[in-house]
Amino acid sequence: MSNPSFSNIDRWLFELLEGNLSPEQIAQLETFLLQHPELDVDKDVWAQAKVDQREYVYPHQDKLIRRRPVGLYSAVGFFTIALLVSLSIYSNSNADFASDLAIANNQKDLMAETNSIVTSMNELNQVFSRKLPETKTQDKQLSAYLNTSESNQFKVSSVTESNNYRAAGNNDKLKKNTELLAMNGRTSFDLKEELQQVRPTVNKLKVQKAEHIQITEKGASDFTAAKRANRFAKTDYKVTLGSRIHKMGRSLQRMLDNPIALRNQRDPYYHVPGMQAMDVNFGSVGTMLATRVQTVSRAQWLGEENQQLMNQLSIDGYSYGMRGGIGFQMNHSYYGTGGIENYNASLTYSPKFSVARSVTVEPSVRFKMGSKVLNANNITPGSMVEFDRLNTQGFFVDGSMPMGKQLWYKDLGLGLMVNTKWFHAGIQGDNLFRHYDNIYSNSLVDPRRVGTHFVATIGTDYQSIRKTVTVSPYVVYQQQENLKEAWMGANLRLKWLTVGAAVSSNLEPAASLGLKFQHFAITYNADLTQSQLLNQKSLSHQLTLRFVSKPSRIGQRLLN
Image (cartoon, rainbow, N blue to C red):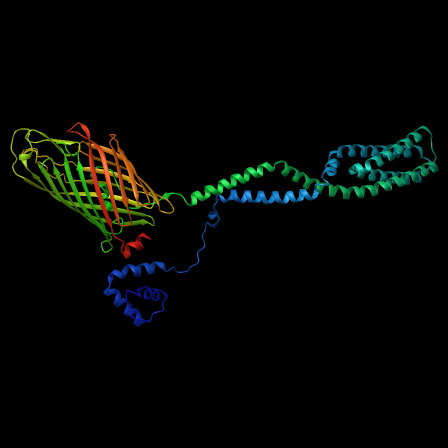
């Protein structure tokens, strides 16, 4: 095998994990890795890819059985199979169904008539016992025979309709003989002759009983099958309804398997005036695991006395060596006719901590330095200034003069972002040191300080399975001095076209239209926001350009 290089490093790492390298080759590989520390991530990935086989018996294995909704489909399938089998049986036994059903309906009548035969035999037994006292031996034999006949007659209780009429004829004959014995005394010889006449009838009943048992068993089996087929035939409409429900269930299952599902793109767009991802939460730095360059130009309340032109340039990316995102941002604001200009630059760092496979916690810190330049000739003393939206300040209302033209400041911001594959949520605070902002007065007794800027947000992305349609709703709340508002909005992406809209808690509308491709995006945004100085809502325009590079090799592995 050739020496280690970037082209074959994966093969060397694979052979290392498999134990196929010699000691000399292992030393050669370790030397190469020391010379190229950026390959440590490859070594870690290969190490994590190896799983040692081990036997493990889960102590609660019986609790692993999950009751899944597929039971519905199994029940429907079993019902369908049973229906087909039953219909097949029904088609084979349909010819004999009517006769078997008639046998079942006349069962009570047969039992009643058979019981009458048994009663007649009992009467005949009593006659024999009363009329033959002188011939005890014959009486005993006759009584034994009659008892046997009686026992046989009790067993005839299940004779069917086909034998009922014959048994009824024999019953009439027995009744007639009983009446004759009761009226006229008979001798033992006569009784023997009468007994000989009864014996063929009893024997015939035995044969008929055996035949009846066979017919009854077959009839019961055929009757059960026919009854089941008849029941299914009467409820055949339920099968059709069940099939429709089953079809609807499968359609619903396909929808659940391929939904417009939650996807966190880590690249949100906000309609909040003058704020983008890195302004809403500092933890957005480096979340795309690629280099992102963005410019924002905003013309706020253009043509009014408190108009303001704002420009922003930001660059952020992910550094594996620092295990986090790094971002740099520059801002410039031009107020009115040049009375106040603001320059600031900030550096943001946001480490990424994976607390689960699909959850990362991303704290952030931002250090900001800036300067405010004052041109007092372009502002009338005693007038009101609205440099920050909904926060007005009186400009030297006491008639004093500014002490200088430039004010330097620095401040700190902290944030926390939670990124999951389902949603993102964050909270942050800026201007925590509340730097001095006394350009509106030269008072040293109670100099003005900037208020802390608090922002909270939550949002997500719904993406189609083909990734051609994306819906991204969000909510942003911010508070700074007199500014207290919440924005609720959403962005819709159809392939490369993006459309968005939002409204604030002060009923201020905003809308956007843009184009978004894999590495480039342009978005125009217009909003009608309230001005405290003008005491009305004025139109503002904003244009955003975004360039995103291809994720690095490390970034691609982390994303996957």
